[in-house]
Structure formats: structure tokens, C-alpha cells
Length: 428
Ligand code: SDX
Image 1: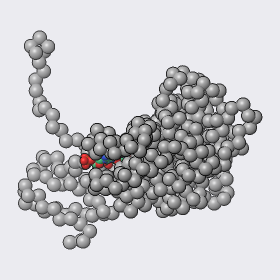
Image 2 (image 1 turned 180 degrees about the vertical axis):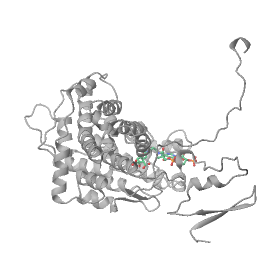
Image 3 (image 1 turned 60 degrees about the horizontal axis):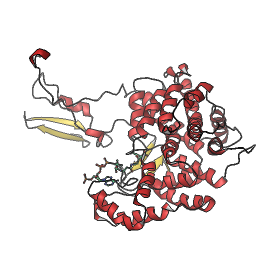
Image 4 (image 1 turned 90 degrees about the horizontal axis):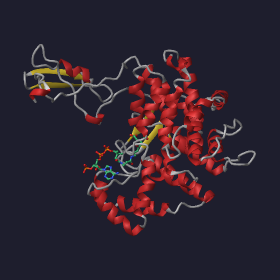
């Protein structure tokens, strides 16, 4: 009997079954052989929210939640944040290796020269109410872009998938900036191809009457690092949405619109905005104990805390916490940082959070930096979406090229009514 297997006895029939253990998993399809009669469908696994189910094999991102480890294609996030750039990391996620100088120059050129959007997209954004949430604008316009690039439907062609990936990575900042300018009633600023990816985004956000916008180098670098930190995170809710919707072979713009919609939720990418709202609601250090009590009672949530995978400090939060002080030195300290630090200190000493292994996650400090950069709260998840775009596209590409993958269609456990006869309304 091979060691890497389970022997399972079905006590209903007395039969034994051998299930192979591979990469720490058993194949769910192997359960189907376990039946109580020939016409029995066979066993399934039941796992709401997929808490203990691997939906794919992947070589993109590795997380060790217990140790607080995050690596993109094997490279520790701390080293990439310190030494790499967002476009280099985007190349790494999509291609599996760090680019040569020439490869990076070519990739950067391809992204830079796809930043413009069709003027009809600008008119579409104009049609939104002045107070429309920018994530609602973003997910709508990303989906609408599928109608401007019908060639994107050819998902069988690797070259075509690459072209659409360039378009999406390049255009997300443009859409985000246009959504922000629309909200402010300001004219849209077209991309400036002489600026860096992060610098051009700041230009499209903040350029006013100056002839040429010059980004603050500290803010530009901090934004590039924040994009790196958000670039991928294995099978999170929005990456799963990208894979599931993409598995129907729809174009990548429509799949990425679904991923953006998933990220919009306050339990996912919307948490960075919710953290600032929470800190404003708490208001002062003296109010922290009452807030913590309500969170422990389940009356509220400590937003920016806790994680499905990390049962240790989110390594991204460690990097962001350090980055915050660099930005504050350049643009002024965010007064909420002291409240956030005190809230973290108290929570990490509280049995409720310690027992549940609830630590600050990527969203706990990121909003403080965005706010200090002058960005409005509802733009924070949009920044997250820009950073996550290469990750979503890498997961999409891996799904499409994995021979084990098919259209995503989970099973269910039916507990509803048995067959019953229709009753005309006159008899009800
Ligand atoms: C992101 O998946 C990813 O990788 C996501 C992400 C990425 O990069 O893609 O890392 C980005 O989404 C980060 C998470 C941002 N969300 C928040 O900060 C929202 C606040 N956090 C939670 O809502 C929660 O921690 C989740 C959603 C993040 C994780 O939820 P789980 O794994 O389903 O855990 P759970 O809700 O089952 O909680 C377990 C226990 C519960 O208590 P009991 O029922 O056991 O008594 O912990 C409690 C929860 O009530 N709990 C919290 C809490 N988070 C969990 N209690 C108070 N405050 C919290 N923040």
C-alpha cells in the first residue's frame, strides 16, 4: 500500500477505498466511487466558501498564513517592494521570471503606449452621476471596454491574450483617474507617456493648470510599492471570480469587470475605505475600548483586521506601516495614524483577537497613506484594483492554459422540497 494514500472505510457498506494523497490533497472526484448502491451518485465534499478546498494548482503566488510569508513566483514580497518596480513585478507574475533589461523596456513600452481610452469611454464616464462611487464607474467601464475590443473574444490566441493584458494594465489607471476627475468636476487629463506608471497616474489625477505635472518622487515611489504589494494574492475572492467567469471563455475585459465587482465588497478590497470610516467613527483613543467591546460582541467589525489565510501579521501590512512614515515625512502626517497604532496595540493584547489570530491585514494602514496623498476614501479600492490587475490576468492566463481546468460549475447539497403537484391559484 503506497504511503501517500488514505485508506477509507465506508461504515455503511464495510467497503475500503484507497485515496491517493498528492500535494497535500485528495482528489474530490475520487470520492464519487464511494457508493451505497450501484445507482448511488457517490460521495461529494461539502465546503461552503471553499474554506478547505483547492480549486486549482498554481505556480504564481505562495502564502504561508501561519508564518506570514508572501512570495510572487518565489520572490519574497519584502525584496520585491524594496528593489523592484510595479511593471517589473507585473512582468514577473505573467511570465514567471524577472525580465532582462530589454524585456522590461519592451514591456514598459507596450504598457505605456496603451494608456489612452476611446473617447466614447470618456463620454460614458460623463454619464454617471457626480456622486457615483468610482468602483461602480470602474467595473462598468472595464466591462464596456469589451465592446471596443471585440478581438478580445479570441481567448485561444496567446498573442491576443497578451495584447489584451497590455490594454488592461495600461488603461486601469486612466479609467480610475477619469472617474476621480468626473467626481471633482475637473477636465480629464490625458496620459503623459514620459512619466512612470505611478507618476502618470498621479498626473492624470492631480494635474491642474501647470503646463507639465511633476509628481512628488516620494509619493510616486510609495504608490509604485503599494501597487506591488497589491499585485496578487493567490485564490482570493476576486481572483476566484476572475477564474470562474473566465472559465466560460468570455473576454478578459468582462472577466476583469467581475473581479473588480468582487473586490468592491467591504470584506475584500473595500476594507481600506472601511478602515478610515471606522477610525473616523472611533474619533479618539478614549473611545477605543468601547469600539473593541462592540467588535467582540459582533456588533461591528475591526476593519483591516483578520484574514482567511494569514493567522499572523500580514507581511504587506508590515511594509505599508513603514512606507506610511516616508509618505508622512513628504506630505504631512495623517493624524489618524496614532489612533490606528493604539487600536492595533490594544487589539493585539486582547484575548478575543489573539485567540482568533486576528492581525492587521493589507488594508489596515494603506488607506492612511492614500488619504495623506490627497485621495478620497472611495478611490482607495480603485487603487487596489489597479495594483491587482496583473495578478488577476496571471490567474486568468494560468486557468486558460491548465488542461485540468474546465468551466467552473460547483455541485450543491439539495435540501429543498421533494416533487409536488402544482396548485392553481383559485385553490390556494
Ligand atoms: C483582503 O483573501 C485574500 O487574500 C484577500 C486579500 C487580498 O489581497 O486579496 O488579502 C485582501 O480582502 C483583506 C481582508 C480585508 N477585509 C477586512 O479587513 C474586513 C474585516 N475582516 C473580516 O471581515 C474577516 O477577517 C475576513 C473576511 C477578512 C476573513 O473572514 P473569515 O476567514 O471568513 O473569518 P470569519 O469571518 O469566519 O471570522 C472568524 C472569527 C469569527 O468569530 P467567531 O464566529 O469565531 O466568534 O473571527 C471573527 C469572526 O467574528 N472576526 C472578527 C474579524 N474578523 C474575523 N471579529 C472582529 N473584527 C474582525 N475584523
